[in-house]
Image (cartoon, rainbow, N blue to C red; front, side):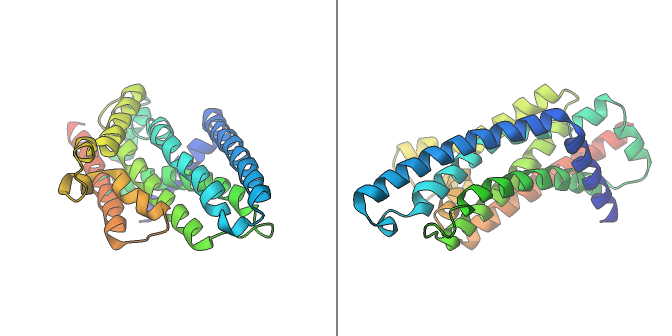
Length: 251
């Protein structure tokens, strides 16, 4: 585990010193701030017209939509941020040194994933400050807000594991980004045909990401949804470790 934490710090430092990662984060926060202010303006107008903020709900009208938009943005942002986790090191020939140092395949995968996930948690925390700024001025459903943040943290963990796997199968970050995006789209739309046919309780529905993110974002914390995110994260971390092991054998 110590090797994983060292690699996590290294990955965090790599993201911290690169200007493009800060530019991406600033761009996302600017977009979310614009959405937040727009939703807040609509909420205040409704509050003035009804005279009762409790009947409208600042959490449902302002906080949840902003956090929902972050979930959508992460589908694209995480593949971009994670594309260089392993592919970049393979291109720079620094992965060979790491493999030669005797660090385990699983430790490398977990360390890289932790570093990327930590960066995403920072983005989620900064976004959470927007709805939390309303505390003291209006009533917030802290239970639902907490469930939303939990959903985003699990969502980010799964996407980071997917991006890590995509980065491990190619030396080209662009291809890694495209592969991770493809996997994300498949997970989001795998049950599209079933939903169009009116089927909502089947295995194919269970496999889809929105089936599990939706209830959490609505404030419903169920073990089946937590297990799904945990399984997706674990499966792609295992696939990443296996791919790293194949690279070790090839060397």
